[in-house]
Amino acid sequence: MMFKVLHVKSTGALLEYTVDHSATHVKWHVSSLSPVGPVIQSEETVFHHGAVILYKAIDHNPSLSFRVYIATNNESFIKDISKSVKHSSKKFMKIDKPPVCQKLLQNGKKYRLISEPEAEITPEEIEFVDGSLLKLKSYSEVYLEQPAEFKLLLVEIDSEEIVWKAKLRECDWVQHDQNPNVSKSGTSGNRRRKMSSSLPDEVVYDKRMKQIDTSDGVKTKTLLTDTQLINLAEKLGKEWVKIAIANLKLKISDIDAILEKKEDVTINKFRMLKKWQEKEQSNATAQNLWNCLKNVNSVEVQDVLKGFLQET
Image 1 (cartoon, rainbow, N blue to C red):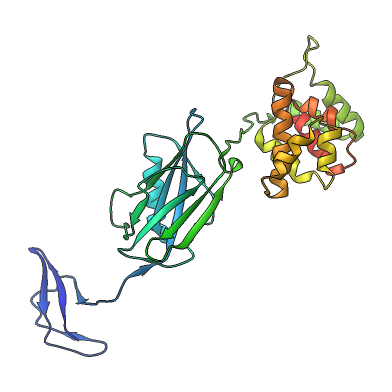
Image 2 (image 1 turned 180 degrees about the horizontal axis):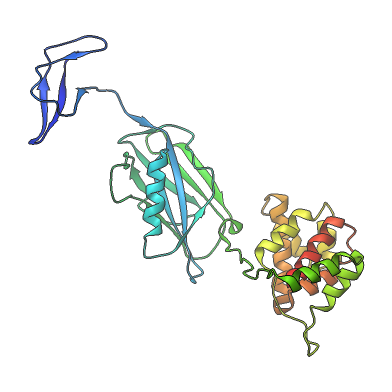
């Protein structure tokens, strides 16, 4: 085996010839104690554990725009991508999908990013390189004019083998509203909590129900968030279709349209609640939902609904 030694000096990097070598040592004429290391010429192909990192642009445009990074599965590289996105002029949110590629990515090999249904992808073809040492991280932009569920696939061009895929749904990028109101701690607050804890649960609940009405008798119009609806969807049982029709007054055609998507049952329930929310519009409040579902025989469902009322 023939190789040289990379010798980094103050004047620059040099490739110096070796005098001798063994399985564990290299011998050469030492000219200084600067950093050194053996350089071995190899014809072997370099493979990497790959990862696909997704970010969605956050804006008021109804269209969908994503950044797709094809990266080596390296912690520092992925952190660099996160920093790059953070310092972008646009705002992005990370989409949590299984990132690891099902096959090692080959350095210099070309891959194609595909969307089903078709989307605008720029660039579609990507020559994979280890970009961990590059300051600017390359990515592909995926753009859909109309918001819709879609699949993304990374395909090796030569073999047409799928090395990574993911299905992106609306619930993956819905922005969940967080309630900024935090109960104040203090003597009066502690006193109120102690008084409440001494009352039966039914009385405490009735008192909270009455607090929903404003002083002029008009009920508050705080609409339910997607986070609340997905929490409720997780608690609805096998009778959710019956509840949709009998309690929420949805049409059977609405349910059929949801079931046609053949998604996870929790997502189906979530879409059912979203359909009710669309139907009710400004009346899609916690109070109205409780009025519709108060007869549902489920402790978990009732607890969630009571929680909604308390948050109002």
